[in-house]
Image (cartoon, rainbow, N blue to C red; front, side, top):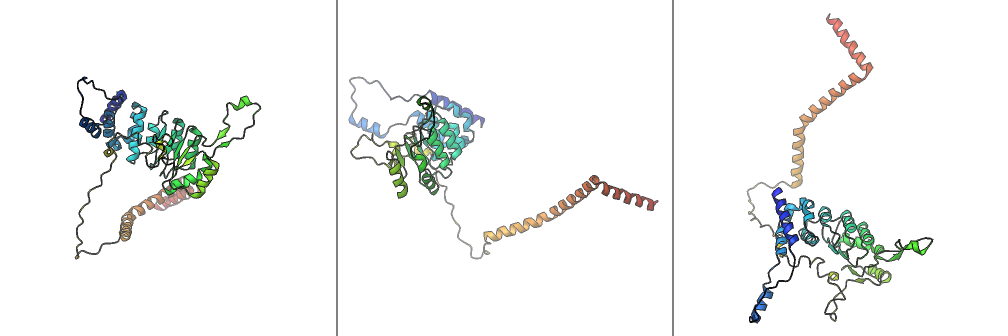
Length: 348
């Protein structure tokens, strides 16, 4: 494990020194490449060195995930975000991993389909207050309490993704009141004192809500109470630049797609285990015992094996209790001493 930590530390140092710059190669003015050269370079575009290192690290992420808090400080923020995205795709993302990698410069957070809970989400919301896009869809362990922390601690939140599973759908319906902008009731003596207070609440900056299976009642409520929020936006065919609807607000594109776009998808692909050949049943074999009967027989055998030990333990406890009683009770000790004295007199 120490050797693995040293390797990870060296890799973090190399990633921190790498600067992503466009590749430039001096060419003589007389050289004019053919059109086939450009087509070949587009088809076989090499991956960046950073992406190759992250791919290698991501393939062995389960071996170092338990000690990630020890070497996370060596990685720059954008590398931490990429590691978190890989961990999410490999079903390794939880509160410990998320809080170990969280950086204040992050602007997007995708924890969809992970084991992150309200505690981890609240911790990250406190650290990453500049988040503008968050995806909490298909999170079974996130409730309205975690969403409340996001809304209160991330004033720049513009895009929110939710739903996708029964628990997340229920959480989204419970959070409708949290998303509504509202004015707080304040009683101060002058306007100058109001400058240091928050006169508003709710998700004031929210503009895009991605909730694919939103029910009609929730949609009507949001349309009436939050008219500035667009629900499940779609790219407009007349907006070729895509500036009206951000890419992060499109349900068809993962929120962290741009973070891992250049990394080989084999990094988080899980290969299926080969199927073992099933032997044909033997007609002369005795009938198989049901699993419930196996458990019952195993319990009976265990009870029979432990019965002598339990009886011996009970006898020892009974003798110990009698001895403690004789030592602590004065009357019982007097009776015992009198009985012993009478026995000695009879013997003499």
